[in-house]
Image (cartoon, rainbow over all chains, first blue to last red):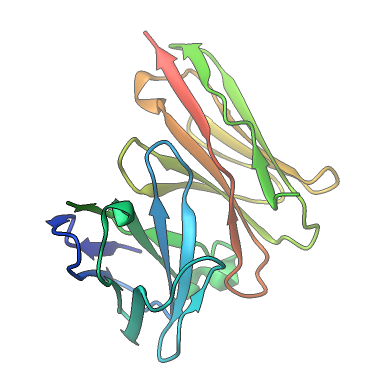
Length: 120
Length: 110
């Protein structure tokens, strides 16, 4: 259980275009999903926390108008990088929280396989 | 002060060695603790949860010391396939506040 998928796994786009990344929890309902980015040889950086049916909470320094997050259902959250530029090239990873495990004290996040974005 | 701190390493150990990582956390209200493993250019994967009484999974042992506010991961009989970055994660259980360490890099050498 606790499988999270992400699509696409990699994308190359021209500067100025928008890219949409999907994150799905396949075998559980995720009221909360998280979006991270990771640059080479650096640690994960939390971008935003996405709650189903409400607005995402963005971390300081992350532009909400540039990184649009939609969490329309209990199994799907999307991140759209608008007007992407080369500096947005990164590894974007989503994760979902499996609240079924909360009562066991093992409530944690399960990560999707990531999306490698390259902006030319 | 960071919520979670880890020695970034790198740790380079020979095959078969025993290696231990520590991770300290600053918030005494922290409730849940986890170790993740991240391979190069891949997503983090849950390795094990850390329980108050300590827990073992094969060659891996995790322990929690609430008094000193640290968790540890012990790997016995290291394999080449254990080479990865190990992330320590702490959750306050009061919401969606998960804190990640920066990771400890391990390379097991033949």
